[in-house]
Length: 239
Ligand SMILES: [Zn+2]
Image (cartoon, rainbow, N blue to C red; front, side):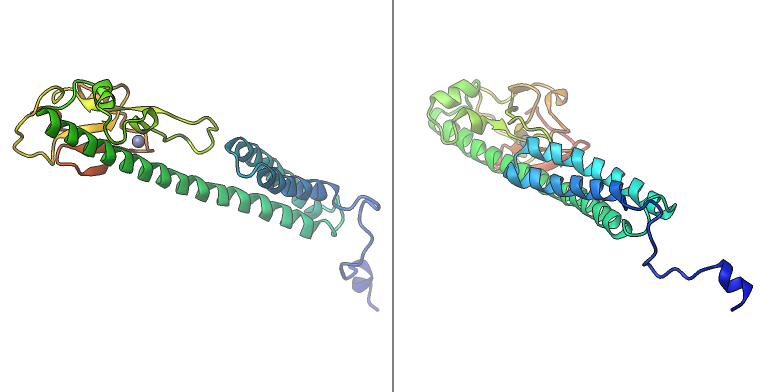
């Protein structure tokens, strides 16, 4: 045996941990927090508040996991904590990625609900116009006419940030230039009838809630079609 072999022993993975009795304490704590993250969310049956809480615990677990990983690397917790630390980090990061995906899917769901509602409202407004030979003067008149889709919740957009637990009821605006009239339009497919709005009426472009669905908003047009629109798309309100 040479002097060189005596000075550099082979690492086999069976060595006594550098801190005997406490291998990977931080790693196990990280794993526990990671498991808690999943348990919290599943126990609350996917409630938004539980989602917010589980994102917090996932971040905490991920940070603990990275700290544990570094402690293992520097020999502070021996070698046995490494798989636990890696598992904890993977679990927490995976959970956060899954949540980002769920958030994206929920955004799409809100967009689709909003498109369907404004399509329904467009049908109701068209029916009113046929019955009265003009558009209603406000939402109340449409509701009073017993129109299809007249319930209060259907006159509002439910879009909210996916981590906000409170249900949302944002207003839709009616194009103020058309109310109480039965206009003959050159291009009915270009003129807004309804849109995600900051109030019940669309008097100017500024009344449109142009970022309600992320960078997008939903609008219904006089010809009955509905669109997901970019904030930069041209807006026609006048006759
Ligand atoms: Zn909307």
